Length: 388
Image (cartoon, rainbow, N blue to C red; front, side):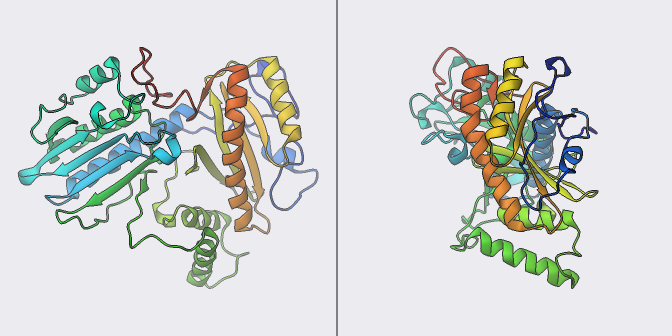
């Protein structure tokens, strides 16, 4: 895919027939650049495809999962969980556990209704979908207990990875692999290091946990980057500095960050999915996030987005390709790590605050909002994956 980040031309609310909104104003983090930021931000066609970005992230996760299953030793276990702190599912833990057995065999278990609290259990349609994906009902596969069970082999790792993806995405309701947490352990419960599973987060082990704040991590990461190149901040390429900051925020390394085909870094910040794009000429970091999708553009929607943008201290809101986006640009000149951190934090707040307000007035779907989460599974209506 060779799509560009959604943006528009002009300023304020455009003709609804154009299918987009460009609302601009004094909404930039970093150096003020009078008279230039409008053309910098709004000079590209609105061709971003959120579904393609999400699909690509799931495909990358599946490839990485299959590779991990082929290399883990016998007796190892890999647990993949939908992070309840982001999904808002509370005590409901949607997870898939995979164990490497002897002679190249693999056993997998997916959480069943007996382990889920009332209101979060799978309805009949979801249970039928689990069976259609290849899972045996609870108790059928030896050792599965109250969970769905499945037997496979390392030679079928790709097929199993696909089944796990569809289970987490279509049945359990994970909107993006960045909302997943994984942990690998050996036969003696020791923690095993595995290559990153796409944008999913590795669970913090006791050795990895730290009481230090993010600011300390950022300072150390930037100092290490300067020392490695023997240069000052102004000489390190902007893209490398951004990757250093993002990796420190995610407690990862720049080499392990996932970049999609648009060149965007994918970050899960709270309940928001945030993308970060770096531009070279002029130097600019664009932080953007989908607030609502599958929304019908109307003149009233454009007016509302324009009004909200004018009232926001930083950032802008606009609609393109049936998706409402929030965007905060950070100028690369005299780049400051704290400016990028602020943009990500504000983006999280915008998504949490605005998605409910706009959804109630204009409909559409929130990326991971109340009512779009895997709740009330016992009702007749079954929620499958939002975008796929």
